[in-house]
Length: 624
Image (cartoon, rainbow, N blue to C red; front, top):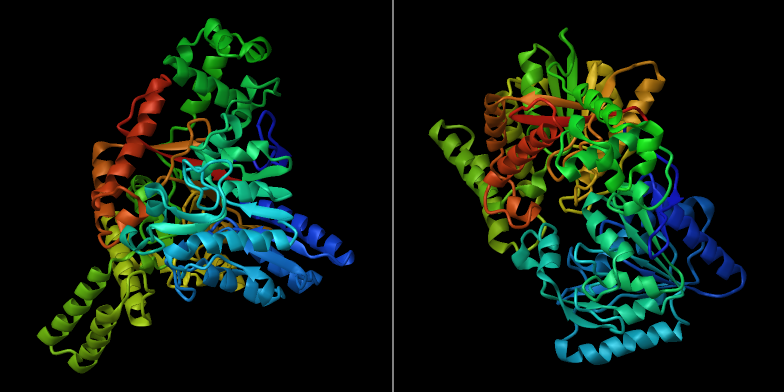
């Protein structure tokens, strides 16, 4: 039931906002804007001055610009660039340097002249910052000002590193980072303690001087702050809200990031709508939860008091609407998710634990009902393992081999290399190849143990280790054509009747999004060759499906949930505190899973549907 609409402007926002079905569609649109600007200025013999951003959000934009350079001859030789910010202190060759990131992600692949690239210097002394920042602004003015500024938005609403409290007139400066910003960056730095406390950033006033501004925001985790910036009053608590006063600024969003805007979440509250079945379902469920009444207890007056006059007139009365949605929601309840006859089922897990965290109860149910369940782990997840676990497992293998007199010479050699690496390893340094392999093996053995806890034998597990993940860092490479081919070959070999895919596009590191994209491409390929199967999307690690989105829920008993938690406990090595800021220990994963599953059941109960201990929800993907 996931709707994939074309791009459209969202009405009733204080800044023009264009929504695209996916972040890839949005990136291509902005790339075409930049291409048009560059070609126009090149024809007139003028430079094009771009303000650039870093982070996961603009990666797709830069890759599309690289493609246009290589395949369409887009000439960047006259382009001048100014980057928004840089951590301070930060060496330019550090894996966390924005200077290095820009070179590796974009500049090394196009023909921008080196002298035209400007990135704040993270090595300067704090006492030199004021003069340096004034000089940075002077360089922008000498270039003629910024033609087009690209922005992202942080969870605090910051643009650049203009944290809450930054004024509308602030200029380029050395600033102290907000604690939320540092926690959000913690995983990339392998721990919050390694994240710098300061950064150089263009000021809000500097940004607002750009002739055109485009802000990109993708994913559900950006939806709340996007709503604040676009629908609430301008405030220095949300620096992005100052764009409301810019004469030519645009928010470019995917559907997830636009999800909390009034025109998206409750369009009937901002004007007339066409009452589609999906919109009716959303409105009635929202009303039921809002007024605290079960679906079958809703009255005409409830609809009138909550801006639903048209829905009542066109599709009412309340009794009819409540019964209609009650019946639809009852139809989502499913005790046999793959049907009564044994089938082959394939579960795709982006990381080695997403399967049990997000749909472990359903996996247990499928196995109990005699279906042959395969799990395909798409990445090895090695960057999420603590160093001390890698050292501990290395020592264990050495002692194991000594105990049983197995190849002691070679294992001692590996141990020596690993210990020497850790002894010299600097904070936030990337791991050696030895350590990456050890960490991958740890995740694999944990995945095997978790699958066995669900009743799945090792021979039904597939460890794909897709190429885009093999960077050893948080940043990922583009999808490789062979990744798609490998997934298509797996589907053709197993011939599943159902597959399950992580539909959680808000994964902050982009792994879930890239895995889903790869699977969808492979599915379309094998579908075009005549192979057919159902595709179901699960969530659970970051968000749950909204109740109006759910097309299937699988009830879990207390015993089911305990077995699911037991499987989650098999994954003991992850850096949970980095992945989920504020987490104190491994319990957070099973607590989150249990809370989400029980919360879904409470929503069903509040709607007047049968009460269950816990529920796992799914949405069907039909190739839209």
